[in-house]
Length: 336
Image (cartoon, rainbow, N blue to C red):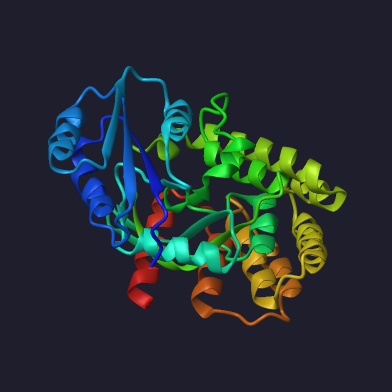
C-alpha cells in the first residue's frame, strides 16, 4: 500500500451543476492520504456554498476563495501551497474512478515516471467514447508533435516537476498541451496508464468548446515551438501539418511520420495509430486524400470501424459541429 501524500488540485468557476459528483469522486478514493486543494476562482453561483458544506465533513479539503484570475494562475497557486510529494489534477465537472489515485501512484513507481495520465471515458450530451492516449514516453513524445497526448484532469505529477515548469498564464487556452511539451523538453519521463480511470464530461459550456478556433491556432504554435526544439525532422513535420492542400501533402506527411516513428522505435501498432490519428483530424479532405492514405498504410492491419469513418469523412465534408458529422455518429452507433 502506498501512503505518500497526494495534493489534489481543483479550480472551480461556476461549477455548481456537477461539483458534488466531482468532489465526492475524490473524497471516496481508496488512497486516503491526500489533501484536496480547491480554488474557488470567483464563482458567481453556489459553488462556494457546496465547497464549504463539504469542508465541514472532511478536513482534507483546503479552500482558496478569491476573485477570478483564470485557470493557469489558480493551478499554480494551488501547487504553491501544496504539501504532497505528488500533485494530482481534477476538474469540477469530471468523475474520478475510486481507485484512480491508488492505481496511478503504483503505475508511476513501477514504470519510473514523473508524470502519469490515464485513458478516459467521454460522456454527456448523448455521447459515450473511450479515448486511449499513447502509453509510453516515446509514444507521447511523438504524439505531441501533432497534438496533446494526455487528458489534463487525469494527470498526476511528482511535485519536483514544478521546480522546472509551470502553467503559462500567457496561454488563454491549451495550457495543458504547452505544459506537456515543457515537461518533455525538461527531460522528465511521462506516460499513461492503459486503463480508464476518469469519466470526462463533455458539455457546451466548456472553454475548450467555446474557444475552439483559438485553441486550434494556439495548438499549432505549441506544436511548432516544441518540434523546433526537439529535432529538424520533427520541425519539418510540424510545418507540413500547418498546411495540407493536396493528396501529395498526405503522402509527404505520412512518410515523415514513418521516419520519425522509426527513430523513436515505435511499434507497428503505434505507427498505424499515429497515421490514423493524423488523417482523422484533417478537417476537410476528399476521396483522393483517402486513396493516398490507404495506399501508404496498406501494410498495417485495418479496423473496419475506423476505416469506415475515415472513408465517409473523406467523401462528405464534415467537422465536429456539422450535421453530417452527427449523422455519421448515429450510423456508427447503429452499426456497432
